[in-house]
Image (cartoon, rainbow, N blue to C red; front, side, top):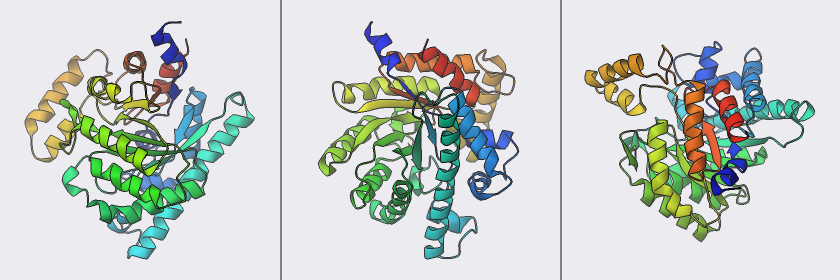
Length: 343
């Protein structure tokens, strides 16, 4: 068995996107809020569970809690709470509901045809503010109380993994680690994933150096004696992620930390979307032109499952041991990925 085949045999398959899938199944209000509220809605909770189950049936080993915006300050911003204590209480309740939905799906899987392999739940620890905009990220000390609530709630619910994802600054990761070090959650494995600039994959979206961020987080985990199990990149174009992994892989070579990767499946990049918010019409035009011409994408500009699996193969060949999907990816993408990795 050569080294590449060895890596592929050891890859853990993380699930794909949730927000876009909920929208396709009729749950959306133009924001992520409708999706997280679906966890506790009697008429919609079954849809969340069905998506989790579909990912497990597709071959995923880990499902992520549907709690990306279940953070206190978001509760106040969207009118779900009127003050600080109420916001903390509301966020914790939504996180618990999200874990319940994921656990219901894994229990069905374990009792059915998928009982041969234990399926795990990753508790989502997201940005506290609007994704991608590093200038909106608060100071480390200001983030610690909210992150302490999120992490403590997830651990109380007995998730298997703490998944810190879509971080655009290194100070978010440091705040999460400080919060974990102050809690009783110091034994749950931690995965950390940063989002990078699509056109400059050696930089986080805030402009922080990807290599510096990963190096500092690895060192901080060691100094705080935290169980950092994986570090990597998500919520960026697959091609950018491939380039970023080449920068990060030397940091974990020969060590106990794994690489993780999960990319977006939209042809219009996040960087272009951010530019369009500032009135950059040229970015919109370039995205539209590529959607029409790119053979790896369907007529709506979504990356086709077989094309995404091709990127996943590249990542596995680079030694990545945790591979999933991010925005725009669906169960059919992850089915192709799981099949490719296990063939």
